[in-house]
Length: 452
Image 1 (cartoon, one colour):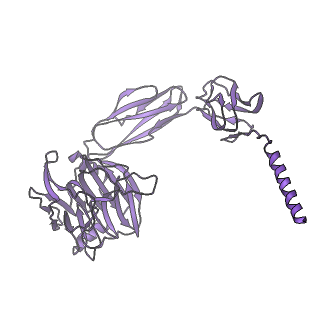
Image 2 (cartoon, one colour):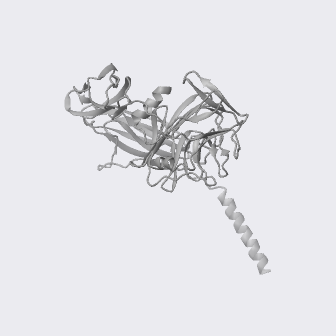
Image 3 (cartoon, helix red, strand yellow):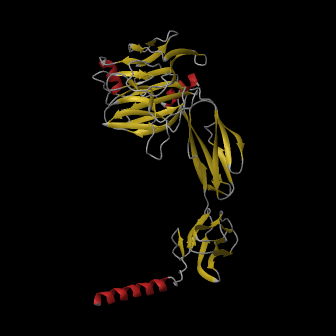
């Protein structure tokens, strides 16, 4: 009986609490979280060059905002609703000659929820130019510098830089032209930017121009295709280039390059293929391996005939648990990658060094890719169409690929672990070369000039 009474009393109490709970009113939520810290005087500060003071408004209802004070400030939102809103007070460069200020007031209905004083000191004298330095390859070329300054500005070209001239100019940028460097050395010029009324405030932009180096001759591997689709290595190495013939292979004369290109059409990206590609074997060539091991450059001129997919593809490579090659990146879980972008990989210091270009090769478009590993200077580089896309620091020794003790460079496919082809390529390859040294920027550019 006592247990029954206790249970009934508990149920009655719960019912009473539930009844009261339904009559509770929701407490309004309102909070402001400024993004930046206040200055020593407890005020929010915008830099003299301009910028914004940002306030995160979190509210369960409608609100309003206003600013009052000196001119020169703008308010992003005058009212808002429930949720989170980024409210900002902005100002352009303060060249008024005095510090200016404004007060931000935020209200909910008739109630003031917060006031914030924002100040902006006068801008200090400055001048910036973008980019801060210029590197040119050697041809006649134009380049533009953007200028940001507190006051009026002027410029001058160094007296020793008569190979530079002005093409056009405005209040915010200026375009220059560099004459072709027909000499045998790089040359350095300087362009100075100064505040007109304060000439001691200025910057110097160095301009480096490479000389047009002669295109080097491939001395480790230079594969040339003939009208029958056969291939020969015309470099000093004279490697045997085996044509692993298949119906999916062909040859085409490319008028633009005055040479034959190998044509591959496997239909899809395949693995463990007996045929359908070329193999340049260097298994027993210790001289070749020694030259590769102390630094090299790899060059390939190719054109895809398929649409970019999600698998890794290798038009010219020698990779299997080591090695090097040019390939197209496979699908990755990394959110910052570019699917199928051209990349250069080399196995150095016990791990793969990957260089991603950010360039995705499109169907029926020719691309010139050059990857190099400089052991002496501990760096690897990747160029696409004559331009340096990425460089990565390296350390350690080169590790060769190995397929059951065999080593070869594949053109149209990559070696797999059983001495067959994988990561097959659909398209054309006109050039597949190796050089017994890391080429310079000028030499890579000269290779590109020959085929562009």
